[in-house]
Length: 418
Image (cartoon, rainbow, N blue to C red; front, top):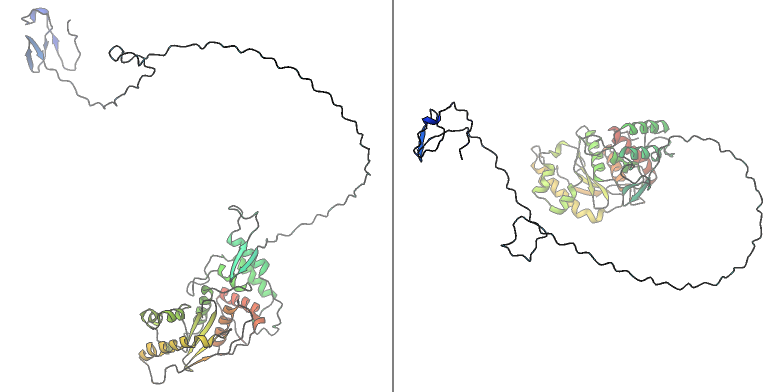
């Protein structure tokens, strides 16, 4: 067979049959090209180069195995790509004989006809009573406040207890401020406990409470207490936590014109655990105690709040307790005396002989009649001691004192004591 001619991009010319130089006598066209030539079996071959293009390697196709292959035939006689199908075997039609069931007739049993008496009901006409259209005012639904071990739990109904209808913090705050925080009909006619206390003051106070963001801090310079934490102040029979007590004591120290220094609520607890060491020394690091007249130490005994006052003018440590645990805490208070005298007063640059604390005594404090108001007694005793006045309140004044502390912490001011 004569080879087929291929078209290339190279310019070329075909010669005639007579110009062929083929010793074997086979007629083959000769191509003239400027490129190199090769002699192969008597032919003049021309090396024609083409443009090479890289092709993407195609993925190898695997043939699927054939099904229904006759396994009886040998491997040599069976073609490789032939499907052998099984013959169609028809099942014989088997007819079942029809077996007739005997007809069994049931006896007809007639039921007796029992006639029910016709009882006519009297026609009672109901009077048409029209209900008056009473428009209910928009009152915020109050939630149930559960008091357990000094903590506040807000309980909602089952219809509101889901992800979409669960009340927000603002809605709970509005419910508490509007429905629970109300004016108290007190016997303090002279306004000695809460100066200026009346219905108009509480109404204006409630209006400011609703406008305030419940998650906002009261004053970051005084502590991390938020508006939501003040629920524990005005709600009765609720314990005060350390955030509220520390915030109120810091408020007393900020309003004392740098005459009162306030320690942390964890100071006395760390002093009982670690004693006088480097850990407790950090509380009064770089603090010159002789520049202050008093040091207030709010102390938590695990389940009870007490007040310890270091009075440098009287050179004594005074212990205020509404339940009178002075006898059991006297050895720890003596450790505080040693901590103040040897650890700090003796190291003061302006130290003089006779500046040490010499006495530890128990102050006069009103007594509480329950187990929930010790924090209010502690804060109020500190307020009276700051003004160098004796405590004149009692257990009956606690609901009004709660609202007073609530007012002072919210507005960041101290009301006068008469």
